[in-house]
Length: 184
Image (cartoon, rainbow, N blue to C red; front, top):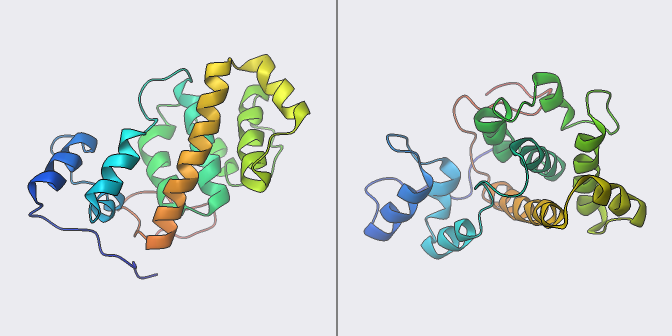
């Protein structure tokens, strides 16, 4: 699939350079998504002002499970692959579990806590609602602050999914594809 919007290339203007430097590790090239978004510096700045990848009330595992499941349900293979490549191992999500973020629930590889996060992602994706039984189960495992973070993550990564899918951002070199899709 051809990108609908080519990522910007260096040299970048001063504003773009500043924004990209804030979200790119030193010595690394900015991701294609960021170079696409910098075509509208305002959008890039506003989206990452609300970024939720900082240490927050959730553990890295719960955060990444919500992101992976949300991206998988949205068909956002680019963003799913970036998060698998950069975060899944650090979050303690093994290869079987990575693949299972794209599969049906329940799956035997998930703990009850993990399964609740994935069920929440599905409920929000499917109906933009959370049933009372699911909410009660979540409330037994997570604080109010953590629940708000999970809800916000789902919404944020729906928006990121819309951007990567709408612009048809090309996959980053070396990032995985959804299970069953060949590496390209």
